[in-house]
Image (tube, rainbow, N blue to C red; front, side):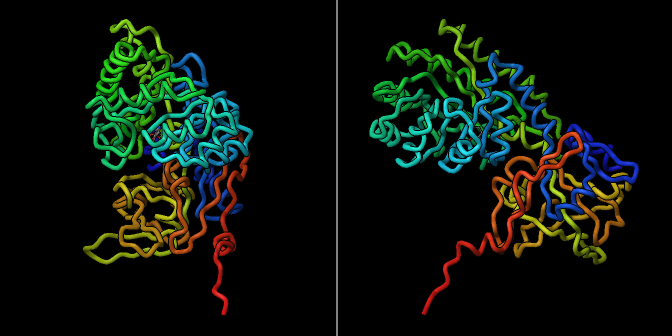
Length: 436
Ligand SMILES: Cc1ncc(COP(=O)(O)O)c(C=O)c1O
């Protein structure tokens, strides 16, 4: 039975109705489809909040957990995160503006990015952004020119190859992000960050990658950061009062994955930083984290309608749905996997092997290869792909001029449209016809 098999991947509030429908946040998903159509993104508020609480419980102050906006952001999400007292990690002017429209306090925003423009820095200055993570020497000059007055952290690449897909590895020395520890580069960056007028250098940042299951990478990164903190104190008198270890905590996408509990991961990192700093007599820094996927990912589902089923003897069976790589590019981009069940018959036996194909003109547009689904899956069934809350909507595109789906927040039996369905008119609005 798919519901039981996938229970640990589904949002925490997932249940079955007496009609055999999937229920999330107290809302019958089939009824949501009747109201909002497909493709449909559903986000479960309780799952977002309980995941956030697991990380918050391991730090002294909720504001030390910066939710990574890139994983999923809209005005309502900013309001939710603000309501939890958390910080917000943004990495573009667009993410910053979304937060400001939501009334998110500037001092709880941290600004990332390997190419922050002068305009973005000016927007950050005007918004009173609390922290900027410095990523390059060019940026240090721009910060001076922008007359910023904020806390600065220096992003270092600790030379750690996280055990994850190469596209989401960021801690290795050969990276577009941050300053490598070798050749005195990071030390020079700290020296120059300390000299930016009006700003206060407070610490170091490292984010080693995403969807990480093995804590060994964090362990090594923390040792290297601690050694570097000792060096920076010794050579520059730089006191590291903040250590931000980024995000990257893996979540379960498929049946066989078994990530560590989120609170244990957060606790392990916080304790390890403290231990390593203590060992080097560096005092007790504030430890900050930036989870994105682990907060939003498990909260999300994408519901599609099956439009065609193609079966030829001896070949793969395909069911094509009304979305695809335009709303979930991860399988095509990273070769990542998902599970699925039928929202309209959650108890149907998953006795078939069917690939869920998107509707786009790319052979690579397959959301799931060889999904376990009912063999009698047919046109009109509602395929619900699980764990799509992170890096799905935020990476969505208009490929093939496809409007993006709406996002519905569910909680306590109420469904709230937090992002409306895009229309072809929205897309055409930017087109400028040739005249003459
Ligand atoms: C600097 C930084 N912080 C935090 C995150 C969030 O990572 P995740 O969503 O895997 O928790 C990312 C993601 O790439 C990142 O680049």
